[in-house]
Image (cartoon, rainbow, N blue to C red; front, side, top):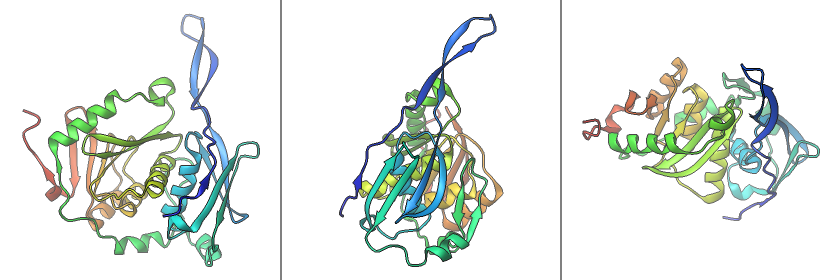
Length: 272
């Protein structure tokens, strides 16, 4: 794998503003950053994402992967993020021959902020096969949730962000926060693509609800387990059943709801 040339253009996650509390006192208050980032693929404008800016290069690469714009990380020569003009320039080796057709078939999802998924992704899920022998134990789920609970986050400082994480058992591999949950998912997909990480034995955690977009992206990354502290939508449920993802919602502390893929989940007496 030939790693693309990347800038390192992370923005500060929070800024401090003065606010007045209930006692009339002026108090310094951290708020989440938010920046527009327009993606240009070989000088062709694709989309504008609203992002925290913490991992812009990974976000761009993950967005391209999850939109199936490029088949391989080797197709990318460079990703150059320039906040002076709020733009990310992606240079490819051979271009995208059917770009106009891809831009024409889009579905706008329920994701907050920019949440466009190209229509042919709905057809691609028919081809996805997740590992049948992957298993998740209840004790591993609880251990993972404990790591999430104790992890230092922007949300604890400033709120207003969604978080996503990739685990191998209770081992935290990546944690990304952004103003939109789809951005956090895409950034993790970008990290996985850059690092050559296989999703077959991984657990994907999100603070956001389990929508069709979330399920499709987890399936595209080859991840059999999708966990959220929030709830789910009907289409998310239907697609999870179709592709065979084990989906667990309302996961916090010692509580969870096993929603789909029950055969992969093993209760090992962790709650007793």
